[in-house]
Image (cartoon, rainbow, N blue to C red; front, top):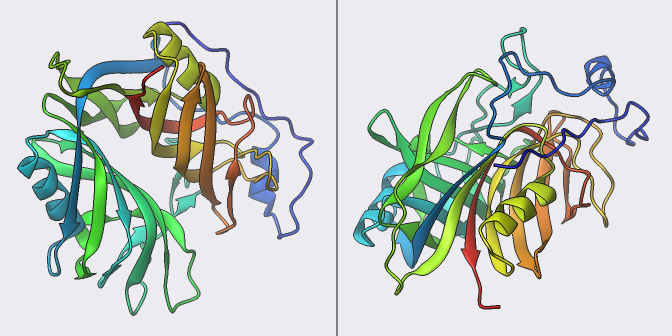
Length: 308
């Protein structure tokens, strides 16, 4: 796998209007440093056939169980699902946070539990497995009656459906994301696993993981170029250091969580619209600038090829 040169974050980025903490300013003076040795493979790829699927999360089931039910009914082990509409109560989530020690370069906020639950505006869920059990990694945004951040990392097993939630997505019968220890970041992270599926009746695609400090657009383009893909749709989530947008102010805080709202590859060039939130709850949405969005901890993506 071809390496992509790490992207450094300059300390001279303009300050946002919201108050920045001293910790934020300190982080902006250098690139995020992870505690372990950098892995050799900066981009991990698994080609696979993909099945389109749709379904509804039922009232009373938790998000993890409901999503895995829909994928199992479609004969799929893993993939990506988009959630839209409906509500959860209870609803629990965490946001990004500065680390509390030197064992991680980033961390999570305390668990947040809106008193009246949350209405789902949109979310993306990566369907996979951890220690032999069903697992889901989900980022999204929502509406609550509390004055809490409206975006973050959804604790799917702790969220129970209160109003039906519409699901669409793509799954693989033979490939999935497996949650495994990662020496570089000291986190347990999703990694493409399983085997390729050769059924030509299925849509072609790949599961993709991007490691820290690789620019999001450049890494997607590199992976697709190596696989001979020039046209595709792209779905996924992760974290980016100080997200930089073409049509919205940059988030200067280096620790964020992101979700792709629209992603396409056109003639080998990635065009990504994403939503991001930082440790202060500042949220931005827009088209990202190529070359200005290095991955912080991980990016987990599904690429669905399109006719040329």
